[in-house]
Length: 214
Image (cartoon, rainbow, N blue to C red):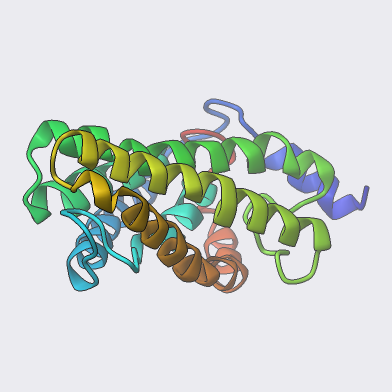
């Protein structure tokens, strides 16, 4: 394993609290949550498909993936709150459906963080996705895990909840889930660019979390 990858493995892990949370970081955490709420709402209302909260191009997705890789629990929290408020309450969903619906964003963010910090970094893959364009295995995991498995779970779960609760017609389930999955896969193509070009800036100022919360 290359020296740089060893360093990555030793610095960015699944440790709970390996450092101090500064005031600047708290501000960044709050800002990223606000950004995800806005992008979630825009994604849901700008390109609506079969029901409330469901937009074909969910612009929040690539951003909350990057924020999760940067800031762990705070990025996961942003994905969840963004879905509850932006794609849920602000689109007319009541609170209980919004909470259930938001699992479709919370679980993917959680699983992505666990994979990148807990497994892939130990295999020499960058924990922030900066090597997706240059490392074949990094490309593979991005396509299979982020664009594939976790994205598919989100689409199937979110539309299923709205179907069960009567917000989406049963006959529209598969078209709704398919549009969700395809649309999210499209916007996720932004994620490698965000990781590659923005992560070095955030890292330079020491603002990346080395563990779950700091």
